[in-house]
Image (cartoon, rainbow, N blue to C red; front, side):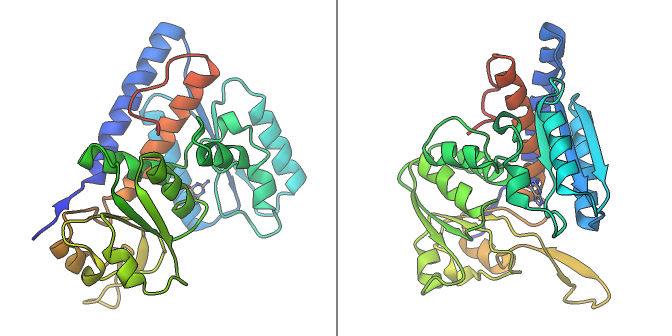
Length: 299
Ligand code: GUN
């Protein structure tokens, strides 16, 4: 069998188009422009690339983008003061503090100082609690993107066995909550799981979010299963040691032979993350103004 490729790049373009259409209507009918503030502390090169990309895509869908670039040695007090200003600014509907933060800053404290209604990352403890109890929340972008692709591919996920490999707060745990919310039977596996191969082999839906290049081989995949690869790992190119190559957490070639459907790396989950950030900003803006939320763009 050769798996259907789930094209995240095309799906993300569709999501962005939906967001752009809704934003245009908001502007025309309500005179409201959604605004996203992104805060970057320091000069981590990967974070700089992400933040630039977020700003560019925010403007492309017609929203206002506010970038706040702070020195690496910014004090916690100054960062908290900026977040407080953004919390109180009615033109800002979404706030994202790019992680990781420099070591002297307490990430939990900083994230939990964001107004939960503007927490478009869904990392605030209030949103984590709301998601865990099945209440309306802001949902972390990467797992939301995975859920959208799964719903699009399968329709209902009810009763399916889902295995999430990885237990991070950003992906693994919220992904498991979302799958549970869609009535999957969910297992969270991780580096200490006994007989990980057997656990994975029971999955109708296998989500790999461990951050280890090509860790999951094809013989861990149940024939016909759907494989969602969240990993983005840069490795030395196998044929040219002077070059690098992006790979996921699953061994794509062998998994694609067994799976029913699979997301590629690059071009799978990756592009969906920023698309969902824009969707979350729009959702936050609609909620703040007591307007109907965009359909199909929330959990
Ligand atoms: N750093 C890597 N991924 C993310 C993300 O999804 N949100 C934030 N805020 N920082 C990140």
